[in-house]
Length: 293
Image (cartoon, rainbow, N blue to C red; front, side, top):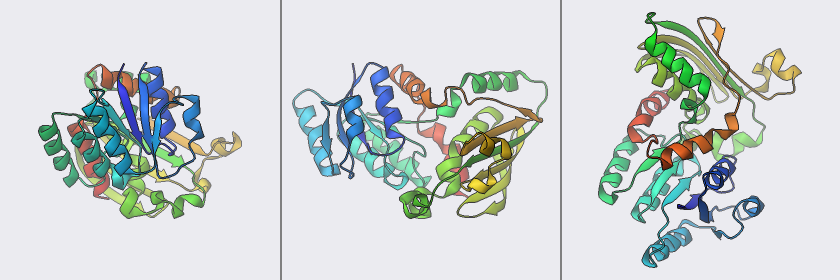
C-alpha cells in the first residue's frame, strides 16, 4: 500500500484522483486546498489530514519522513500555473509526483523538472489518459501496421462552460495557458502519439472561447476545432441534453472512445504504480505545440 497526499483537493478533477487512489488499494493520508469545504473526502478517506496552505502540507511531509512514514506520492490537481511549484514541493520532500495535465504551461519548466528529478532521485509522472482507451490503443496498432502513410483527420472538442469559467483561473491565459493548453492538450498528445511529431500548425482562429487550425503530423493532417461555447454544439448533442461533444474522424470514419472516459485515471494510476507511467519527455510534444498557439 502506497501513501498519497493530494494538492488541489477541491477541484473538479481531484475526485478522479482520489477515486483512483482508493481503487488501486492505496491510501490518501493528507489533502490540501485553499478552499476549506471538503465533504467529498468523507466518501473516500475521512481520516486524511487536511491543510489549507502549502506550508502546512510541506511541514506534514517533512514530519512523516522524519518518523519513517514517508509519503510516497503527491498527486497534483491544482491550477495549471501552480504545477511547477507543487512539483517542487513534492520532490523536495522526497515524494514522487503525479501531475494533472498540462504538466506545465511553459516548456522551459520541463528542464527544471528534469533537474529536480536528478537531484531528488524521485520521478514526475503526467496524466495522459487518452492513450489508454481500448479504441485508441487499437487505432495506434492499426496505424503502426498500416501501408497507408498519411491520413486526414477531423477533431472537434466542444465542452461548453458557464460564466463562472471566465472569472476563474481557467479563463486567465496567464494561469491556464489558454484554450489549447487547458482543454486541447490531451487530444494533441493522443494524436501526436499515434501519428507522429508535429511538422507545422497553422492557426485559422484563436479566441478566448474557441480555436481552430490545421495540424501537420508525420502521418496525418488534422483539421481541429476547440470550443467552450454551447452555441457550437451540434444538434444531436443538444437534442440529447449534452453539453460536451467529442468527435475524431479518420478518413471520414468516426472513432468512438467515449466509453469508460471517467475511469481512465484509475488506469493511469495502475500503470504508474506498475512502473509504466508517462513522464516529462512524453509531455514535451503537446506542451510545445499548445504553448506556441
